[in-house]
Structure formats: structure tokens, C-alpha cells
Image (cartoon, rainbow, N blue to C red):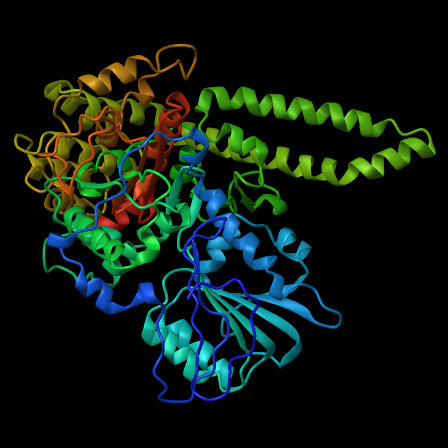
Length: 633
């Protein structure tokens, strides 16, 4: 049943009302139930589009045709993942059932994952502005607070439902409004219904924000150990990781209110194929995915093991560089221990939704960034001088009005100056200019003899860090796997000060992403990549930027996809392939994406206004996280 009537208390007995709404105005959501009360043993009444029989009834022979291609208004094509996530939080904190009442406050309850979801798009101040007096973790132990309504935004897991069920037995708050970040299974819904003996649950809804919005066109599932998905068969039990991956990807599609017009996957990757089949199966089995008013995007599923080079390279754009050298996790950067960093700069927030300068400069290269930060500092100095000229009451009043913005600007300038200073120090201290030049050469050019000589010089050099020696050796091994003397290379690494357990990663990398394991093309025809590299603007010291020659393998795939020339033999499809060129593409990399790939997608979006590309992965890798996950394979 569809419903727009206001919520009311459920009738006594075993009746439970279930309502479904599949196309609300601002991002897909579903009202699982507004109110419910069920005695133990009551049979739950599922929403029509959630029944298991519906999924079982669909088969490949009775596949519902995907939405046909049609001309779109560009405004209908916007795929802004930050706006989608923020829209859900807006709807939770401003929900009419949670409007401010006299003597009744509000609390926002989150789990560990949804805390990250909210923190990436919403500040604590913005939550407080919506009259929430408290934000706490699910399961927090404290005295009952019957004067507060609870808005609960958590993942639909058995663990979370168990915690909620225990809380409903002895409610800590006046009432509960439940918002799950993904599809809630019928058995978990039944468990909630049976536990609500005090009738404190006023509504249960699905808000599909089960992902971390990083940039407008980049998302992550924040999942560790996802490289295991593509490890040799049987090496690990990946059931839970695989299911979570499928859930997260489906959540992204629902948040965009899109159903793929075609699903393509990287040939040669069993995991990419398996995920494509699973996503298609779940879409066909639940009516909430069937949006008919617009052309759906191409869903393109790739595998990290088919491009192990990109996560190993040094980075030279702001966001990617911070992540590679300092670590950028949930929009936070830790500078504690860096020379000359003040106490208030030991941990800073680097968020495109809260920092205009960062939003503008996150894809800027290192050379241009220094000039932009200098302009930021000069502008601040002008404002500071203006605030020093106080000679009257009117001047004082004007200063007080400007002070909050001035203080915020002061902190922002100090933050970016501190980050730039530390990045510059690390570049010099770690000799990254020399290291990066060899990395790029190994990634882009085939000159075995000269590169081997340079590699040996770097491994034997005392000023090159062990981690950089290892990365160079891995890049060399991947390119020259069939001709390289890996045993000699490992001996040289040990003599160069690299620990044995890290040297062993060379063997792991070749087992995981060697020539026989990955799809072809990593070192194949790079003519497209070469053309793109030549068109890059100067990045450092006004000369052609030899530090950013590399183009991720994904870029050639996207170029072919945009032109409608993606070969089915290399990228098979689940179901029929529409004849028209895709106007939007959702790319998901099993095992994790990188900020370099995110920057390239942003550049592609900026230069191709008729096409929208959204990139995501299990995580956002830097070389440290990538090697650490490889180490335990």
C-alpha cells in the first residue's frame, strides 16, 4: 500500500501496518512501517517489493527489459554523491515527526559506520542547529532520558537490531524513529516488531546512505581487507565482505534514484563478474530499483588486481598527496609529531563540504598549490590589517561582526600552511622527486636495462626510504615479471635495509596481480595514455610534468565507454547492451579506488559536460594501505 496519511498508533493485537514509497522527491527511500506492534510469534507482513517470492519468480529468461535510452535534460543527469548523502541527513534531522516540542528534545543515535557517513557531509554545528541536544553511539549506557525523542540512523545489521531490541525492552528515550541506511531484511524487521512491547517505535524507514561520500564524484565503502575478494579461490572466506560490497553498491544506486541501463564488468576478473551478477539479481528482485522516468547509467565493475600500478605511485595533487604522505581518513589528517606544528593543528579536518579553499584546490598539482596558498595567506593578511584599525565604537562593532568569520579564516589559513609545509618537508626529506621520476618511468616506459640500473642505484642509496625502495621493486617486478631476476632483486632489497617480511610482498603481488592473474592491457597499447600525458599542463617549474605521465588503466576503459566502443569481449555485459552511448557511468573498483583515479574522473567530468561519471570502491587506497592489505593475502 502507498500512503501519505500521517502516522497513527497501530491497532492492538498482532496487526502491523506496512507502507512502501519507492519514489520520494529527494533520493530513494522506503517507509517500511510507520508504526508497528507485534506480539511474539506474529508473522510479519512484508512490503510487496520485498518478498522473497518476487526475487525467485524472476529468472534470466524472464528478465524485465532495462530502461530504454532517451534524450535527457542535463539537469536530470547530476550524480552528486555528497548531495545524495547530505539529503538523507537533512531529511532525518528535519523530519516532521521530530519537530521541536516544548519540554521535549532530540537525540541522534548512530553506529560506528553511520557516524562516518554523517561526519563526511555534516558538521556537529549543523546538527546542533537542528535542535539535537545530543549525538551518541548506539548502545551507549546512561540514565533514561524520557524527555528526548531518538532519531536512530544505523546500518541494518543483526548486531544493531539486537542492540535496539534490548533497548526497547527498557526504553531510554520517549520514542524512537528508526532510519536504516540500507534495505532491512524481513527477519530483522520481524525481530524489531516483536521487541517493541512498549510501543516506543514510531516509524521505520530505509534511507539508502550506506556509503562514504568523499567528493561529489567519488565514494568509498570504507572497507578494509577488500583485496581478499580477488585473492586465489578458497584462500579466504569472503562471504561477508562480498555481501557488504553488493549492499553498498546498491545503496549508491538507490541514493541516485537510478537503475543501470547496462551492467558491464572487467573480463578476466571472476570477482567483477560475480559482483555484476549479484547486483543484477538483487535489482531484478526488488521493485524499489525500478525507476522509469530517466535513462539509467552504465554500471562498470572493475578489479583492482587488473591495475596494481596506480596505488603504488607517488602523488602530486593536493588531496591525493595528503593521503599518500600523511593519511586522509574520514576527512581528518593527523599532523601530530610533525616539526613546528602547533597544538591546535595536530589533527585537522580537510573536507570539501566545509572548506571552500580545499574544494577548489583538492585536484591542484603541487607546484600550483604553493601559489594558491600564498594568495590565501595574502588575503588573510589584508583582513587582519583591516581588523587592527579600530579607533571608534563603530569600528569595534564592525570588528565583532566580522570576528567569527575572521577567526575561521585564520584557522583555515594556518591549516593549509601547516599542511603545505609538512608536504614540502617530506618531499625533500624522502627525495620524492627522484623516486617519483623512476616510478613514472617504470609505469609508462619499457627500457629494461636503463631502468634496472636506476633501480639498483635507488635500492643501494641511503637517502631513499625502505618503503620507497619496496615500491620501486614491485613496479619493476610487475613490468618485467617474465624476464626479471626476482631472487637477485630480493637480495638487493634486504642488503638495502628492507625487512624480510616486506620483501616477501613481491611474491604476494605477483600471485595476486601478476600477468596470469590480471586482465590484459596494463602494459599493452598505451597510445591513448601517451596522448593524454602530452596534453597535461606544466605542473612543476614550468616544464612538462614528468611526475604525472601515468594514466590509470581505467581511463582508457572510460574513453572507450563514453564513445560507445567498449568491446564486449573485454568487458562483457549482464543482459542486453543498449545501442546508444551512455550519458552517465557509475564505476566501481573491487578492492578499492585511489585519489589519482578520483582526480582523473573529476577532470573528465569537467571536460565532458555531456557525460557524468561517478567513481567508487571498497576503500580509497594509498601505497601504505595497498601494501598492508597485500601483506596479509
